[in-house]
Length: 522
Image (cartoon, rainbow, N blue to C red; front, side):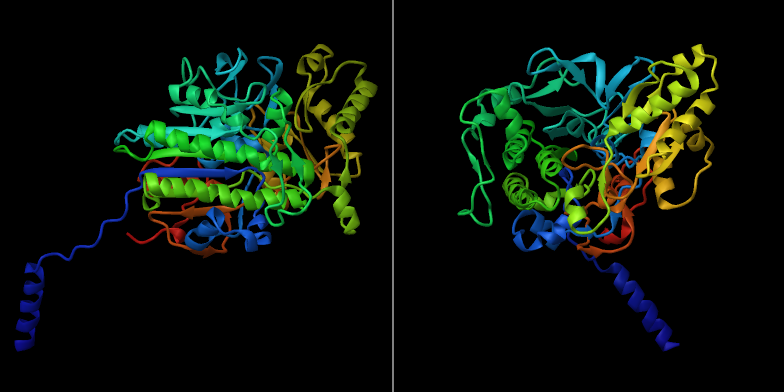
């Protein structure tokens, strides 16, 4: 009996004691959403010995997912950037490629084409916007949450890479115009450029690399990779973005955006998406085994370290949630693979379309049967097919058979197969189905054999194979449990994970899961 009384008294005494206080978690003031274009996952491991700054910091103190992939086809820039903060596959997001044929407009359009808006900041070019994106993003959900106001900006060399991650409700997106050396935007976001962007352009930061030499960061005494033009011209600005100097320029713009827009310094959670495009340009030209790709990867580590150091002084990195990925990987050069006694080669895209034209002309008569494309995927002329009173499904079957005659083609799907779900259940078919949007897809989906390319020079990406789908996914900052996580993950998981951390609605088209294994207890 006495022990029961003691127990009761102990419980009462504990209840009367003041509650033990724990330090509140750091508030996420800024989300820094990073994409390094064409940065394969294995660049984290192949060049690890040379990372000592930003990438090193993420690898040491972040949650690193070693087996993260894109689960769609094709693996290209626009789709990767649309997936990043929406979690959606192309089948839902509507972003089915870098470009496609619009059957209503009867013309090729880019992923960010918008005929209702104009470019601002350089000339009177056609505008760009996120109007083709059919789903919400994390920035959209933050703004719709009813919380303290938040800001969202996207920055890149490429328009699609600046626009698509931040979505429809973004405060602004800026990209580089290599005809003028200016950062530009669209009337979708502004009537005219913000004063701070105009001032950045007037300061001619883009010209500071005139005559600069790109040499090896590991061996400064080695023969330089290239030297920039000594005079200003369009050729200079185009070349500059195909070097690490393009990333240096973008980092300076990111610093200016944080300062001018007071990002991370307001009552809400702001988001800055920065996509480094220069890695992609170098990678396409040189291939993943080139010393230039190694060098720009190491320099990316340094430029990210510079950005982190700036944010540490301005906001405090303990208040910054960083998430980093890539929009796709890349295939090795076929010529390199042949020397390794590995598969690989080139089948130019024009050969594929030529086969389709030849077979349909032979069966049904002369005409321009292919009116558009998205990569190698052809869009057939439906009006011509109707005028000849042909069965559209049968014409597609014949077009597919023509492509299947090419030995280096792995699989060909008609849109009818994908619409009816008559496909296999392996990884390739699942990723192809995830890329099928019935309103925008072409008539055929074409998958080439591993390590083969449709390009006539350089290298590229776009396949459902691991060298194109396997990319980094790293989280670092408030609410994140550091470590290496080896379970299967997808880039689609980033958006729902951020939504959970921020306590906002998951973006509308997200198909990913919450990466709860990387979330700190709270």
